[in-house]
Image (cartoon, one colour):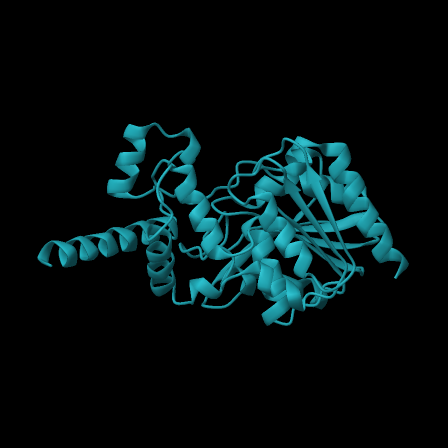
Length: 312
């Protein structure tokens, strides 16, 4: 009995430490490699000490892509101040707000922003809380980041930028968009979500699979303590459920070889969307930029949605 209680306590302490490490950005540390890139020795080191999550930085700017821009700063919830780039288009047909994935920054979306600009849309690239030029040091994998999406929508609406308004998000960014629409009264004219997970527990289990570890009970413990530490019910953070409330035109894109958010997760989000929708699967693409993996197919899929929105 003593061994059982002691083992259970040790597992919970370990799960708490790992959850805190995965949700906290730190300065001056080197990022832990992705699970599939780790040797077994490195995996054991990660199990013992947790991951290192450096504060994401913007290593490029729109200037590197030949684009003029304006830097914006505006408030979100919890005394957070967000930073964004606004790239104006001549005679804009509409505006797009772009939201990055976990442990990334707005600079990771410059390729996508350039394509939206070419399609005639103003593009606003937003750093989530804790990332790039925004304040904070905690990530919640899209839960609190949904507040950042809602704040960005308010800024675009207040500036009276050209309609329609489209929200685009990769992975965590897609999860944040779906929650913002479902629970925070964000009202875009269309959404585009890419490589999004269906349920928070699915995302954690995928990480355990990539580490070649049993998914139970470690996934549940990690999710529980992550939610406790960040102050929300992580088991209810499920984009597939948020999707049921989203009735605007939607485009869901996913890589067929994505191991971090499996294709069936993107399909589950798509199946639950309430409005006009399309699902596009990219052969051989993983959990990375689909616009970089298949530029022509990505641009054609996005242009199709934008043209439809223009006709509404």
